[in-house]
Length: 312
Ligand code: ADP
Image 1 (tube, rainbow, N blue to C red):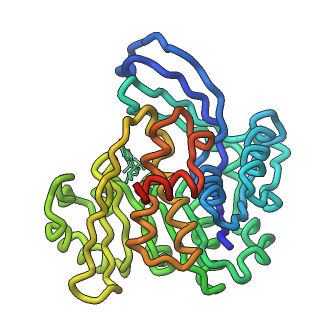
Image 2 (image 1 turned 120 degrees about the vertical axis):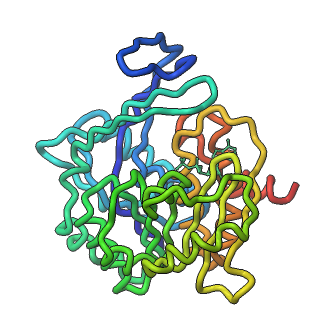
């Protein structure tokens, strides 16, 4: 089983020609309300890709909360660990997407801000026998750390998506088995601009692998948007510690939630026993397919869609 602990947000998306500059007003070309939130997205992606997923989180008592619960349940996610907050509204994300599929996002945490270590304790049973615990940083660090510890103690692989970026304490790094970052988050984490360019040789990532290893982060996936991803695995035999995962060529329409599709796909494959590089290759296809349709959860592929691309 995969336990996903974290956020659920209603995505309020406006499609526009180009993103507004500070102080500027632009005209949109359409508006949509969709289920989102990094953890809900990751849970849905993992479930559609064959994972047995339980989601732990919080929503408000409102229409957005109902929408989120029915979308997750409709994708096969066990939502019994999502509680309702009597006081806070469901979290929302206000998203602008331009004609290149680039986005800008503002989040109001709402009920997500009430998720606490006590919620993790209440759901202790869900962690029993879990293969993967999947976490991101849209809920409090205390909650993330409690979930990471519960996963670690249960013998699960703790997968941490360091997004949206925040500094993390060493204890959380110590509880993390696989760190997943995009290139921007990687450079924020390492406190420098030492991330190689997107077309760099894979050997140029050796210094980055060593920097993460200094934190005790031995297995790291770095996503590079349309350029694919890189696997930094200090636990692999020497010569196999750096793996470049080639990009999958698609016409991107909306990259919102591509990273979440990637994370959910990695969780699904790791829970099925796949090696890290294999999980990343599968996730690369799943995330690329997710960018070819508008929206997040509704755009996510099923296993058969990914297998069709892998077989071609
Ligand atoms: P985030 O969405 O977190 O910013 P990225 O932009 O790195 O993360 O995208 C995550 C993954 O989604 C990439 O590693 C890649 O597999 C896939 N992806 C994103 N954009 C594209 C694209 N334009 N074409 C193909 N794959 C993409």
